[in-house]
Length: 212
Ligand code: PRT
Ligand code: MG
Image 1 (cartoon, rainbow, N blue to C red):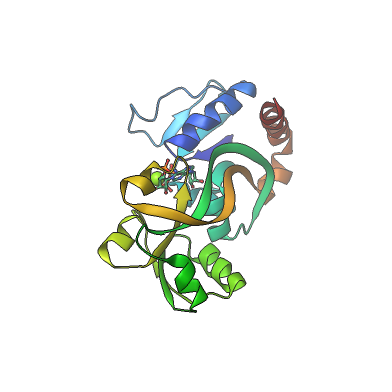
Image 2: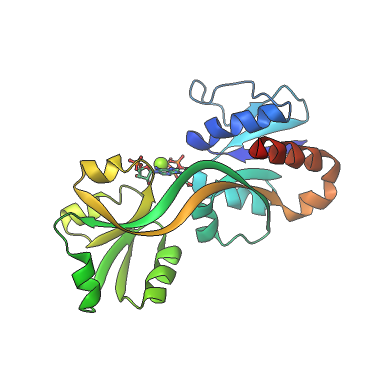
């Protein structure tokens, strides 16, 4: 049995065409069912639905053989125990620094002020500001980062941006682009050896679909 860990929403939706390229169809729509384990047309392949940030953990411990996770999530997890054979080029966005449109970020950096930064991505943010030599106090949040500068919790946020409409709707502006983000295939290192005959064709089919 091969167990694939996916998160509901964009990663599930954008992984479906890749699975189709490998001849795999998921039997149920996660938006219409409360099931957490979904069967596929292949009796030896199943999908487990987990939170996006939990995908690397399931795969690391072998509770899932493989999974799909954003680079943002993998950088925070650290990637221990994971083989990352493919950038799937899905769920693309960028990780950026954003501030209120009335906050002069360039001046704050120039003056060497301490900047309060709210983010879910504390390890990427810490590294980014250390590389720039900017002093920051990091405040860990688990969601709705956009609210932090509006309420005075922070001067800036580090968050994911795709269309930019969430920033715009909240009077925030992107002041630095830290990195481009896409989702990766992650495979449990032990499973790669023990289940090679099942995993290899799947990885190859995914790779072919990404190239196409
Ligand atoms: O939503 P939930 O709290 O359940 O979990 P999650 O946010 O971890 O999962 P999900 O499914 O939203 O995101 C899964 C992965 O999709 C992330 O780890 C990213 O790698 C990738 N991804 C791609 C994004 C976005 N685009 C994205 N736009 N993840 C989140 N967003 C959010 C962003 O945080 C911001 O709040 O969308 C908002 C900005 O979107 P725009 O279009 O308004 O710029
Ligand atoms: Mg989300």
